[in-house]
Length: 245
Ligand SMILES: Nc1ncnc2c1ncn2[C@@H]1O[C@H](COP(=O)(O)OP(=O)(O)O)[C@@H](O)[C@H]1O
Ligand SMILES: [Mg+2]
Image (tube, rainbow, N blue to C red; front, side, top):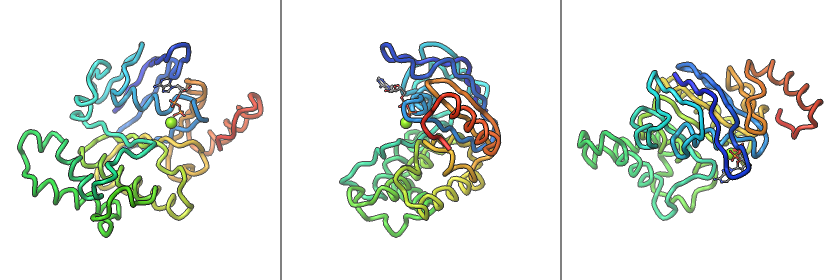
């Protein structure tokens, strides 16, 4: 579904993403882990089209999207969540998700009315378990629920492929478990392919079938979580790396 080849992005002297090649198959939930500053969010930004790559190519469902705008990539079915939720604080959860539906192609092409958009937003809020909180202003929601609003907003774009950026950070174990189950349910319900970025392997270990490890802009491991955990142990021993399992 997604082929990334030899992707590089520099910020001044820093090579944030350094020759990354990655393939994600349809229906997979791939975990992407790595220490802070290893380039995970930059990779999401490159795939989503928020940054332009210095070199390399990104092919999505057979289409070269390397030079396409972020908007064009959304139309092709690519969505993402933000590490720091980008909701509008003085709008309710429902309004925020409705706003996202209105931003979708179907609304812009006048294939749905405002009422339909707001009804569809309720559906996404229900999926993520936030129906009861729909009328709460986002500035009054705790981080866990803001993350759920972010997921609902991403769903509102009707994606085929979703990139989730550190959705578990700062959550308690029960909340983290709920999010993990939700991500898995979304795959079933929406036939989503998922790239799930987290800082540590431990929390996504049981929820993904494949893990890719980034370090200093490069991919240093790719495989089943159990194998990668062993690998990462070795890498840590050699490099004295920050704990990533
Ligand atoms: N917009 C930016 N401008 C300058 N440097 C950036 C920018 N975004 C990321 N970086 C740098 O690129 C590297 C990778 O960052 P990032 O992709 O955010 O890592 P991660 O998400 O794995 O923590 C870091 O050194 C970071 O400081
Ligand atoms: Mg990040």
